[in-house]
Amino acid sequence: MKFFFNNKSTPYKGFYRLFQLFAAPICFILAWKLIAPIFHLPPVMKILQAFVEMIQNGTYFHDILISLLRALGGFFIGFSLGMILGILTGRYLKVFLILGGLLLFLRWTPVLALLPLTIRVGGLGEGPKIFLIAWACLFISWAYTHVAVSKLNPAMVWWSDSLGLNFLQRLFKVYAPAVSPSLIGAARVGLAISLIVVVAAELGGTLQEGFLREGLGYRISRAIETNRNDINIACILTFGLIGIILDFCLVQFVKRGLLRLTRINFYRTDN
Image 1 (cartoon, rainbow, N blue to C red):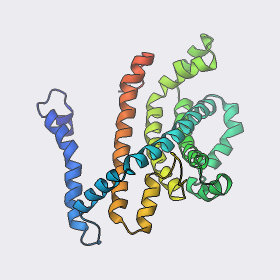
Image 2 (image 1 turned 90 degrees about the horizontal axis):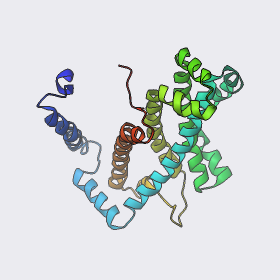
Image 3 (image 1 turned 45 degrees about the vertical axis):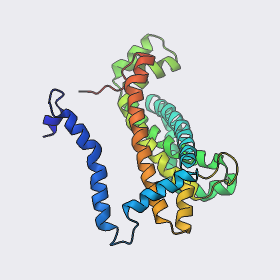
Image 4 (image 1 turned 120 degrees about the vertical axis):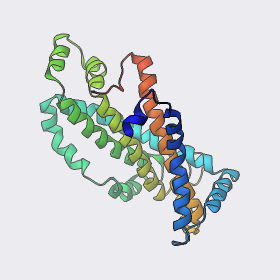
């Protein structure tokens, strides 16, 4: 069945795409109607009304924007640093011997355990939140990249050495394209982790004034305090939708944007 639907020439491909698009929401609504009365959860219509309420009072799209800025800011910082560290430790044994033990230790430090410490040191500003998100994404990116670079074909490394390429040329013209499947996997996992951490960071507290205030995580905490389960669930569903959109945008950017910019097919497969 999978082969049948994956065949590009099949006349049912359009139907399969529509089925993928609508099957999950329909199944969710049906399942929710069954479990909501059992666990005293708000019905579907009340959740939809919570969306409308947040949109009308002007908090919904602002919360989405602020949480996205925090999540993406920390993601880009952490992912970039992790990729560079992964290339260094995966390619140069001496660098791994110096930094590998520390990185392995820090990798297993629970990022959410650092939340009280970051609030203590940096307060409720943006710095601690970006730091936590970047910290989580850094070690995901480093682990994926380190393993991929350490398993590079030696012939490719010798070829880059023989051409006399500097580090930046090797980074963008040899190593990054060669390990692109691992980098894409790290980026997709990192985006998911960034959304998880931004919720925890905003639950810890946010500023109440200025543009960079509140956020979806903060809205969840307020919904819990005021016993608004409808708003709580609406925010959780919003995070799911954001994740789907971010993942789609990332894949399309790699498949089309980077291909046009660099003329390198980063979204290749090994098949």
